[in-house]
Length: 156
Ligand code: SF4
Ligand code: SF4
Image (cartoon, rainbow, N blue to C red; front, side, top):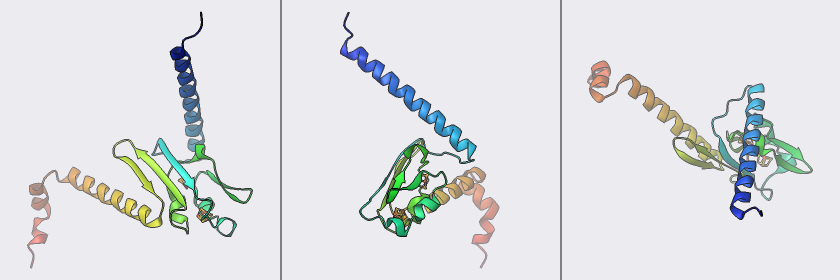
């Protein structure tokens, strides 16, 4: 009996999922072996070859913690399987919008950045969020906060 179109599609999807799972496991094993923690399961990275300073620069290659970037035949190559979307390369790049990184957090959607300024803003927002969460865990409401620290606001 000839195979229906739908069932062949299912098999194709299953094979793709199995291959993605294998890639993910390989990546996890590699990152564990070099002691790098992965925070983002999904992301993308691209480099604009037209604006890249290439051989005069290579700062992104030096900054990458996983060797996902390398020098190949006159340009920066990307081994996307090794990328953890940390943005260290964007932070180190001397050209705005040359490297573009996007990544998805499980709890707060997708982040995109391609300039040092955007990475700095992101880091500062993350730090502020962490400080707020720490504050909230210690002082669940304003009353608790003022009870502990209120006197400092009223000292003249
Ligand atoms: S985002 Fe991080 S891991 Fe990926 S290429 Fe840039 S520096 Fe390397
Ligand atoms: S840091 Fe930026 S300009 Fe320099 S090699 Fe990497 S991508 Fe090119």
